[in-house]
Length: 246
Image 1 (cartoon, rainbow, N blue to C red):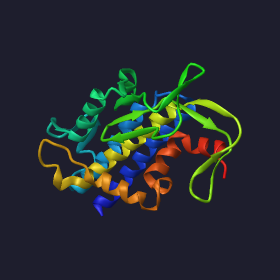
Image 2: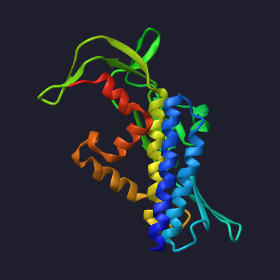
Image 3: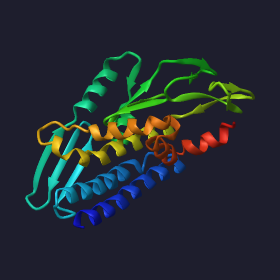
């Protein structure tokens, strides 16, 4: 029962962190992202401590860019693990000429952030995304596209393709896309305690996250609970309801 109540309290703290992401989205600012990360780490730590049968506040586990840090309050002891997935993905995006490293957003968001400059055309002097992935996260690194070509009255046809009618306009997707991807990094951190027996060495491995995420895709991307959660807290869920009709 000790682990159960610690997990319940940790889950409530994690929920509070996600609510701060929603506040960031509504207020159009990144000011609440680091506080959201801290709450997410505290909640995840409570769960981790419960799994280890430790006191609820005995250790603080914190995801910091490509590292996973544990601080033990009793012994004043600090240990660090390296996340090879985050490092590998960031290195790939760094050397690929289709991506540009965004230092400002990286510092604001606590994740390695890159802008994707492919699959675009110039409309009214702005690069606009027509089709394709808006953003993609692996570990604590992600890429995102800034502008997207939005079209009123997009609807799904019987054959599964989409048809468009009405006026086209440019939408700056930067903030909501970045916050969407940040929610995925928080989900990634939340799943780390599930890999307890794999993370005894210096490297951090998190297969539980990818197993759960891809299992959620069985019913399709739009029905994946990880994506629904990210959409909800980044406000893109409401934008989809507003601009896409069937």
